[in-house]
Length: 396
Image (cartoon, rainbow, N blue to C red; front, side, top):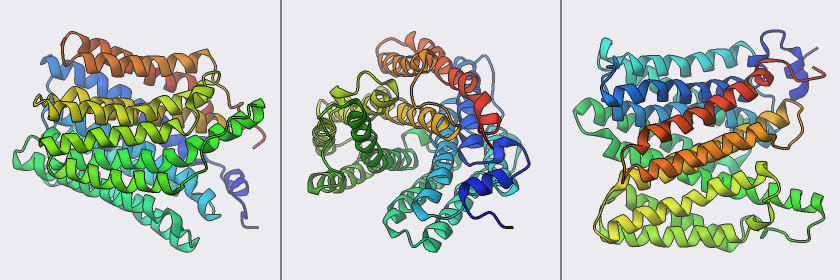
């Protein structure tokens, strides 16, 4: 008899539990890659080791966080969320294992790209998001889930950005300041704005109702939300195309103000008792903070973009992905949706890493402290959540 529900599909899989649902391999090994990549990058940055990649140390670091790590987390999120959106069965088993192997091949290919023909690493690396996009498109079309085509469009833009990054790196352009990285980062920020704008108010409303608190976030996707998202697309497009102009800086300041106003409507100050909830709000806060920092850099004529940009990269992306991974891992492995002390420590290490990395723009000695805190956060996730991701859900 064929499996007819997601639960039936998972139960029917007799292989490793790691491949019984999309979030399991991609969340676990995405976090593990965040650890391994940092362990390689810190000595490479100081010149203690030389990586066998065609990229420079900073270029490799930027690529592997944005497109390597985030690519894995996006896959884990989409492969888990899309069945809920479409009502169709999730990908499990050896097909999931093959997709995971494709992501892993990309990480290896980019790392050893100096030993390969020039085109090899880009082709291998881009195969993963292209296949993932094709699978998501098929599910959305089959489920007639037109509302979420916007997520697929963002994934397509993210894949294009990865290709541009490779092209710039191969051409000798300094890719960490190129259009590929900016497009990839801008797309990631829009993903957080779109998806975060759905899940954060929803989770907040549910929790407040459970606590008997009469406060409620503003209803989802009202006119103000839609205007903020449309303005965000235009402002981020301007930043991608003309990042160092005063007008762009002013637009980024407007972006920051709009998202601060948007988030204030979600009642974040009522969520401080539950780390699983306030971490989502804290991560989202880095959207306006990063925009304000970048905007001030441009308006004041001091484009020290690396530190400000890390408020988006490590703060918004790192924080939001860690928040989503912990919450989804607890919920989908049959555990209570509450953060223990170890999970709270993971969050605090991540945000401390972001702030020290921002300070490294002033004092370079903070760079290694930031890296150590980053390692503590993601190693903490691997050690704390890895066992439950590797074993079957209770009752399977």
